[in-house]
Image 1 (cartoon, helix red, strand yellow):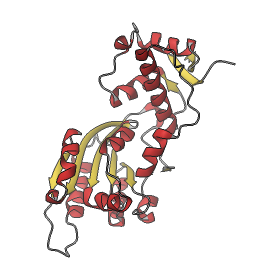
Image 2 (image 1 turned 90 degrees about the vertical axis):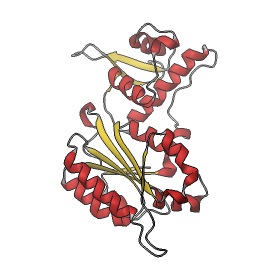
Image 3 (image 1 turned 180 degrees about the vertical axis):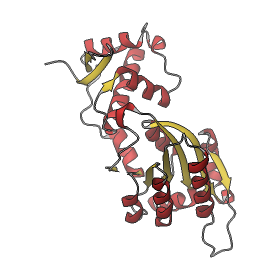
Image 4 (image 1 turned 45 degrees about the horizontal axis):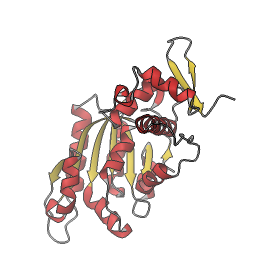
Length: 265
């Protein structure tokens, strides 16, 4: 599972503002070993569980990675061109990426979380420097090609392989009845997925507003009326009636809180 001694960005319902930096050459090499294609949307979806993504940049000599460019453009990632310096030259993308990340840490105070996609231990000093500047650092890399030094230095490290597993292997998710109308079933499933995502982030109290905010970040087009509900509350109450979730009302704010899955005993 993802290692986490994460202390900052997910507590008290605070929504992180995230900058994503991708050392694409390093990632592409790791991918070639595993014979998988890098699917950037999986990474972004996982990060959207933590907060808003403000900046997305990928660094590479893009003449060598043309196949990936369309998918990255579609995900609105800025592609930074870093030409190769000679055949044996160290990848100068590393240096460019470090300079940009430190620059951003200083110039954009509202960005509190940096997601660094690489497996290269050379980035450990960057991670330390960002943490000195009060930033939370999430690392993301492949299991086989990631240095343990880098993993230990980040506030949290997510393995790319685990992104695929968490999507598939969720054991405690409730059954959504098959005989429900299609649109209703879709809405229920999206909300269950969002609750599971927040549980992964160790959120203690799952306020209905927090669930909706996280869902809207991942699926901006979501609208409960399209799924046949007048309000968000109506949708949650219907999920409870169908035995998918359990609700209570927060005594202070009067808003719904999801306390668990399944029917009340």
